[in-house]
Image 1 (cartoon, rainbow, N blue to C red):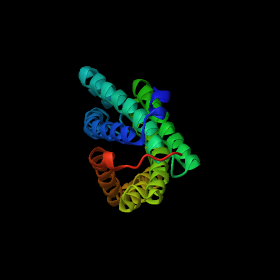
Image 2 (image 1 turned 90 degrees about the horizontal axis):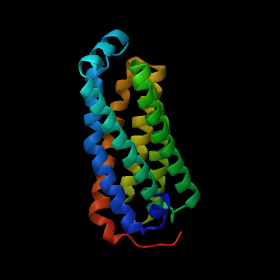
Image 3 (image 1 turned 120 degrees about the vertical axis):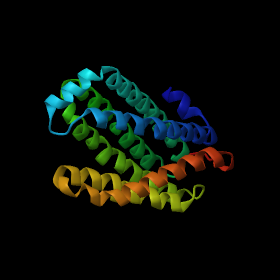
Length: 211
């Protein structure tokens, strides 16, 4: 799969990334909603009882999360093809950060079977540090690309730094102030929606460039 995606054109990569993000933006919130209803923060006994009483929902959430991880990997590779003409080294860094997020995400699913109340902490290591850093690097490359709207790059940087990165930092250092990251997370969500729509609707206008 890696070689196939690496060999496709930028326009095809844009469509792949766009559809991947679309699927994730539908499936990911559903998985999060199900898990948030089952996991009681700080209460392992209540969480275990919820999972035992709703085992099929728990397995459903795991299946949805696996779909998200698969989409994440595909989107990471497709975005690499799209942005590598701007700066190959930074594009590799952005891809590495994204794939590290995928690895930590997968680990968090394993933790769900062992100690479910630790799931969110592990997940936020991936999202709050690796994925947020990916968005910052991606935003810079988008801003410098010349063929993707610069405002999108700015929104990605804001969402990554003042949204998801800030969420990770406050969750671990100042858990009572996680709310300060909410405006940035909103910007990041808008940026992802914008990116998805642009990739799906404007792919044919992307110039094919050699990296």
